[in-house]
Amino acid sequence: MRFVNGSMDLMRDSTAPLYDMTPIKRDGFKGLYHSNAWFNHNMLFTQNANDAVAITRRKSQAENGAHLIYVHRYLTGKIRGQLDDLSLDRDPDSVFVMDKAKRIECIQFPAIVEGVFMPKWMIGFDHDLHSGLTQFPNHETIGRLLNSELSRIFESLTKFNALEFDQVERFIACVRMAMRTDHGDVDIRRKARDALMDMICEYIELHLRAPEIGVTQLLSEFGVSRASLYRMFDHYGGVRQYIHDRRLYRAVFEIAQHPLRRGDLTRISRKWGFSSDANFNRAVKRQFGVAPGSLVDASADADFGRLGDVRSRRLSIKAKPIRALRGQMDGPTLRPAPTLLNHAMN
Image 1 (spheres, rainbow, N blue to C red):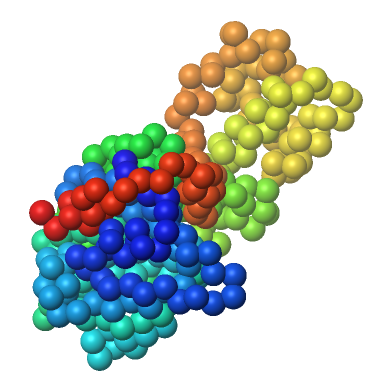
Image 2: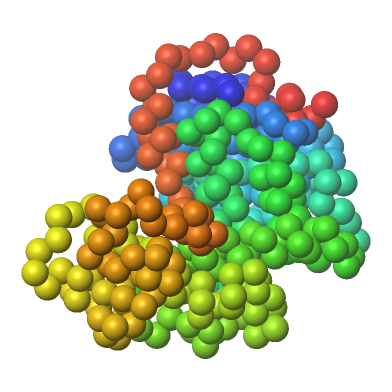
């Protein structure tokens, strides 16, 4: 990992191979630039925060980046300008794929940006088929999927300073699916389907207490076919069984966390969607082998092994790395040694 905390002059020096940057001194301008960068698996992952700046990419700089694409999103801020003959408007809530071979003239407002520089061959990018800038809005399933994968990647990088190779492969598969360069590859589609299932499971987890959560809601929310949705959850006995097991797990966990008082079992079972005490009792006995009231005391004898078959999920889809980025902005100032982008162009 490389961390940079300094002035806009440092930003200009760091990005010189690909851009010319001129600070725009407006109200509240502090002239600061903060960047985290990780080089991993032939890709450069970056988090940048900076004040307003005018950006130009000249012909020679476009040639430097001709073999790269930039998959990125704006957590805050925006860009207005021109990419060759294309209007260049970038705002939060979308993921963008940009061809670094294109010339650019734009204004970037104060912004926090996360992105990945990737060789074009890695995703099968074709200049004859693909636009210089492709947008995937978050209100579309593929945009949400790319946003979700970027959140996972930068959460792992900021927490552990590392990525598993499977994470990288899955992200590449999702980009290829978005750009329609998978060409029917079964492995790519499987990885992208796994990523989509994770996102659906996270949505379920966030809406477990909603009575309407179920097949119809998921089909409407994610635009997948009924057959695809059923295949995803076949291992868990189906979508309905998966939701039932997740609710049961949350109810049992709540029981285990607090001493029980009169009426608590009924309150907790209703909270997690069980229509009656009898239904809840049967579900607990079937999963753990004991009555709900005996769970805490009898936990050593209960069949907790079956609980491990319930697919646990992280609860957040939104971008958390921004807090990590802000938390590191008080670090030491580094001199511009080799530029951050040199690695991506070798």
